[in-house]
Length: 110
Image (cartoon, rainbow, N blue to C red; front, side, top):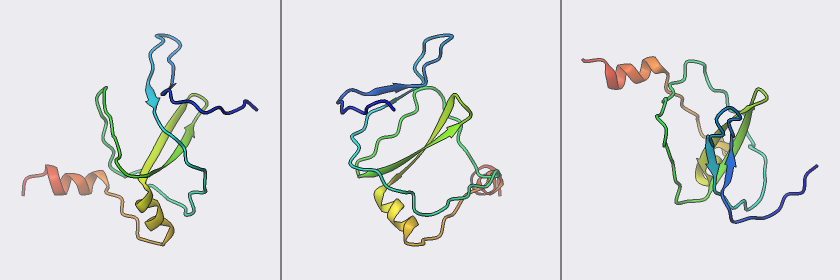
């Protein structure tokens, strides 16, 4: 197993061998590791946003990140505030908006 070393440099991830393009950069300082604590099930009907290049999100509170491997070459990140993670572990209800619910609320004219 490779040794993990501390660095202050951002980590580039997802190098595209055909083009050499970086698909994402992690800039984080990990405090410690823990378990997710509760199972989360996401419906295949859950609404997703497909973003253009350059999408960013920045938190100004402590966060919890879960990296999900997809196949051999892809990953997804689930990121939440530490408060949201604690609420999850305290049994708070999880709500997922489906695409149809989203359209009824924001797209279709009444």
